Length: 310
Image 1 (cartoon, rainbow, N blue to C red):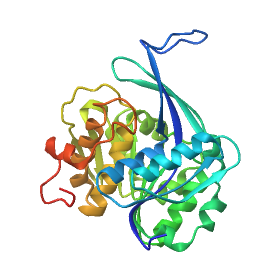
Image 2: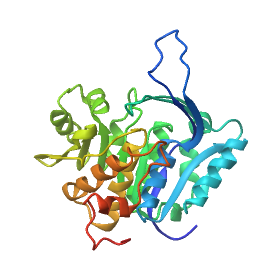
Image 3: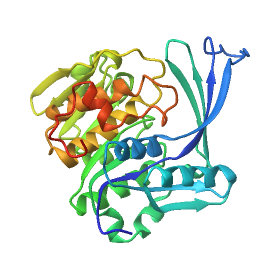
Image 4: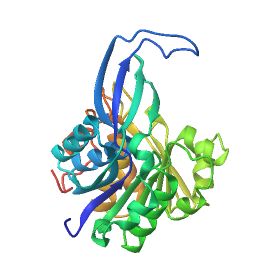
């Protein structure tokens, strides 16, 4: 492994079945899809690709199955220029997700964890120290919570900033992980589930009290609430014609990692870039296919010409 990278991602990698439907099915109902397609996904892999397309050096830690899907997923990450030396293989199936996408760009997602569920703390702890030589660690929760916590602790000891997207929201036991997080980013529903507050500003402040130095609560087309210290601001999103929101949150996380690595740890300065990345990712279909490059964010007015990569 190289001695250091900009971003380390510890997380899930899935093969997504994208289904275009007029509307989501009701319980017990069958609906016909207009189209279907297999595409690489998984929150961890998506965030790795998002960070890489913005110009960061990225290493990925996770597990795929010993099946044909696992081989495809590994090759896809490698072709994006991501270091997959720590992407292991477990017996059984790779992670999979079924995504129903409606004409207004909204989605409903069902995930089968597959190999992702077997990413145990022991795997994370067995990695060599130089695997955690990075400036930013990106975490999500489509992997076991204790594995994410082990990664956060190792990254912090190595001096890296820990960025957490607590999705899907854990049923309990996340206090230690939140306390080990520097920047926390979630959507409005996730923030409410974690805090009980329907107001996103109140939820952001409540999440700050749990340990993170900065909290971002995304609000879709409105942008995102950013809270740090006693200050809370709205970062508005640029207007775009959204066709698929599947990868927006992952693009947001990749842009936060870019901001920390290239601009420094100022959450209020990072927010405009992150909301622009999330907005840009809604303009095309498919989670990874839609993830933007740095030039696209510059076109939306979010990236100064002085940023590395332009």
